[in-house]
Image 1 (cartoon, rainbow, N blue to C red):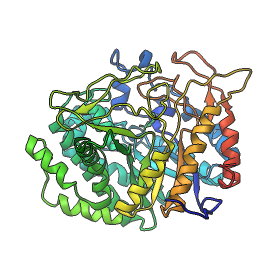
Image 2 (image 1 turned 90 degrees about the vertical axis):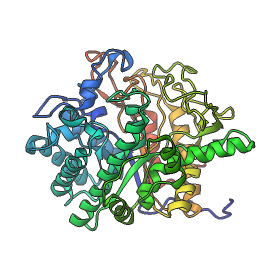
Image 3 (image 1 turned 30 degrees about the horizontal axis):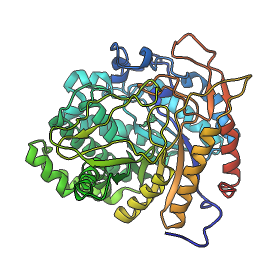
Length: 485
Ligand code: GAL
């Protein structure tokens, strides 16, 4: 499509933002009454993370919060998306509230508001209380739904007077696939498709009931969950590749977004899962609750990093447990897929990052267009960014590659807006450098460099704004009007 007279600027109330997650930035892993999360345990299993890195100290945001917010303020950031560590609020997942945990987030929220930055809270960014894993297997049990909703409600009650933007779940598709198919996240199970789909059903119920709970407490709040959306391209014009794309879309994208947006699973996906005997078990009333929540959702949250290619995968073809690149050595990841349906080879027409993530700015526009025509929902881009090896040289970090990456994505996002997509916010991943889950600290995403290495004791943890920090500051000041000059 070609809009002849695009608007120069982004919408006047556009939320220029940046994001983080508790485990990746906070540190202070056992302070002020915090309990242990599944990540606190998982990173201690030998071989799970790059050079055995942990988030014990992370980038020490817990103790440097005021400094980090000051840097946001100086940049002119409009919104900051962060997650709450469940184990700071309920050290054992349920029971008594830990008031010291609440106090930390109250200080953060107030600090943001006093600096004209809109807080956007993620309720769950993967750090499940270990106590619930021990008690009943965490997400594998239906019990999780009540404990989750109780936790979420507590946040809504304590913070909802000041916080109006809520993201319930971060990348449900990612934490469940890594946790139950690929063994790369807790609880580290391999190819357990039956449990994978049941876990997802529990997560959908937790999402839906939290959405309903929020709206009954604060009808003016805005809510959605964030999906890691990787739009797909069929590998070729062969009908079998067209089918592979349809299967991929139904099983890898619409399976989640249809539940958030419509309150039901895609029919073809369910038929496939039933034929394999791995479809989720519903309880009475679930269907109605999912539908009710879908009516209340205000936006689709999208974490966009890359597109993928869908190609027919024979029945004896590749599975999901192939190698990921966590070292930053280009070309070390292998192709994944579902035998009999699809696999996802590299796109030969597009460049990749050092961690083999495809770089495709136009994919962001496609993602927005697809969501808009399928669900007609507003969109919050809750993550987008480039992981790279940044170098501190003479007190400066020059990251023209990151500026180029973000600029090209924003130009495409602007096209989507001109084409009618209602995009409310754009959060880069991330504000400061942080722990990149499996990839340690060397994979950097921030506008602000943090002086630390994989080894806990190396580095001052000082904050140094990179070139991209000043570029984003200017982009916010000009409301994106000069991106393509
Ligand atoms: C996402 C995740 C973030 C961050 C990002 C970049 O999948 O939500 O926590 O790690 O990837 O690696």
